[in-house]
Structure formats: structure tokens, C-alpha cells
Amino acid sequence: MLIDNHNRKIDYLRLAVTDRCNLRCNYCMPAEGINFADSKDLLSIDELFRLSKVLVGQGIRKIRITGGEPFMRKDLMQLLRRLKTLDELEEISITTNASLIEKHIPELKALGITRINLSLDAIEEPTFNKISRREQFATVYQNLLKLIQEGFDVKVNFIVLDNQNIQDIIPIIERLTKHYQVSVRFLEEMPFNGGSRSFQKIKWNHSKIYEYIASHYGDISKLESEKTSTSVNYRIKGYKGSFGIIPSFTRNFCGSCNRLRVTATGDVITCLYATASKNLRDILRNSPEDRPVENEILAAISNRAKNGFEAEERSTDIYSNSMTSIGG
Ligand code: SAM
Ligand code: SF4
Image (cartoon, rainbow, N blue to C red):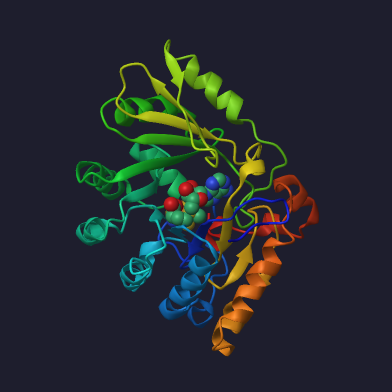
């Protein structure tokens, strides 16, 4: 079992499979993109699988595939098929912008990979295009509806951006949670945008987001959430779905954090606000034995910051990072 130096059990891996993306969301990266990794520096499918197997052996029970845009990787389904053979792995889920997912929906369903977090920061096309700097709204929205119709457990991630998508908050709740069993989660913006813009504070923190939504609805009840959940979840009376708020910048959930991140180039990240502590790529490439890989992971989690604020204090230059390379 993986237990960190603050006695927290780590059983959830967020595994990035690429840093590339077909969108250019302005809160994630600059218009021209970032200095993307060379493909030879990305972990191969064999390496991603081997690492996952080692981590499952150490106690990881859930893996969320992320990126960049995971479906930019043409060989992604090979990895998913292989992950499904790991008996002790209880859940595989994916975070995606859903623009490239359509042709994979039948196989994902057949594999039982039904938990999808889908990023959609607007419900009006011009707002979506402006934020993502691409014109993929219709495809993403159709794929979202298709996933819901096919019975996937879909959570929509909506990053709340001052002066950009505030006017879409109530319409997205109305359009999606009123009629569909879907959860729309509103996230505070974090400063990992590859240098697009810098900020010390955010205007739209979790309480302001809640107050804004609550001022539009009379009857909102709080829902029970898992102990390790990062979102506080609510239901509006009579609505099929729910909404949640994630204080990703305010960071008041770190005490129960059970996550480990590995980037597409093999960096081990023990907190979003931490500098990568180890890199596993060369060890995976040079050592046929798994023990050195296990030891690096144990070393990383034995020196984990207590919370995101301590991680930030200890870190260097994290604000020039983009979420596409950290693996959000
Ligand atoms: N491309 C996929 C997607 O957008 O869902 C997966 C990778 S993306 C980096 C993962 C998540 O990080 C998305 O939900 C995205 O909205 C979120 N994200 C990216 N940059 C962020 C930022 N600066 N602050 C908060 N969330 C961010
Ligand atoms: Fe791509 Fe996701 Fe970043 Fe948007 S948030 S640019 S979809 S990686």
C-alpha cells in the first residue's frame, strides 16, 4: 500500500498520456501552444502499461487517463485494453475535451470505461470558440449528448473565468442538469496556463460561484460526497442532474488527497502545486527490474507536502507550467 508521510493512503493515479492537444484553451496554454515534448520523450504504451502495473501492485486502485488531450494518442485504446487486464485495478476513467472521442464510444462502453470527465467551459458556441481558440463546439456538444444517451457517467468540468464565461453558468445548469443525469462541476481557475497570464488571486472563488448560483435558485440541497472528493455537490429541486464546485485554487481539500500524478514524460508529481520530484522514464527504459521504479515512487510519496500551499512554497517556477504538460 502507498502511504505518504502524512499518513494518507494514495490509491488514485492521474496518468497523462500526451501533452499535445487539438484545442488551445486560453486558461491552459498560450495561443501558440507550449514547447511540446518530443515524441521520443513520451512514455510508450508499453512503458505506460508497465508503470501502471507496478503502481497497481503498490496499491493504486483507480487510474484516470488525462493529458493534453488523451485521444490525440492514436494508440490510446491499446493502453486501455491492457489496463483492463489488471484485476486489482477497480476503475479506469478519462478526462477529455471529447472532440475526438466519438469513434471510440462503442469500445469504451464494451470495456466498461464509462466514467468520463468532459471539459466544456461554455454552452454558447461563440464563448466556447473564444476560450478554446478552436471551432469544435458542435462536435463536443454532440459527443456529450451521445455519451449521456449511451449511459456513460459524465461529469462536465467548467472552469469559471472572469469576463469570459460567467454568463454561461446558469444556462449550462439549465441545459444539462435540468434534463440529464449529469454533474456539472465549476472549478476555480488555477495559474497553470503556460504563461498565458499571471495572477495572484481569483475573483471567482468557490464561495462567489456558489452565491452566484444560489441567487438564481430557491431550493438547493447539498449532496453527500466521498471523503476524497474534491467537489462539494448540490442538487436543485426537481432537476435530474447535479452541480458541484471545486475549490482548485483555494485548496481546502488537501487533507484527504489520495492522488499521485505521472506526466506523459514520466515526471512524478505529488501535488498540482509541486515541482516534479522524480522522473521515471530513464529508469523504465534502463532497468528491466521493477524494484528501482517502486523505490522512486516510494521516495516521492515519503516527501509529500502537507497541502498545496506547502507544495507551492517549496516549488520553483510552477506558474510557468501549463496544465497540458502537468496532466490536469
Ligand atoms: N484535454 C483534456 C480536457 O481538457 O479535459 C484533459 C487535459 S486538461 C489539462 C484536464 C483538466 O484541466 C480540464 O478539465 C481542464 O479544464 C483543466 N484545466 C486546464 N487548465 C486549467 C487551469 N489553468 N485551471 C483550472 N483547470 C484547468
Ligand atoms: Fe487542451 Fe484540455 Fe488544455 Fe483545453 S484544457 S487546451 S482541451 S489540454
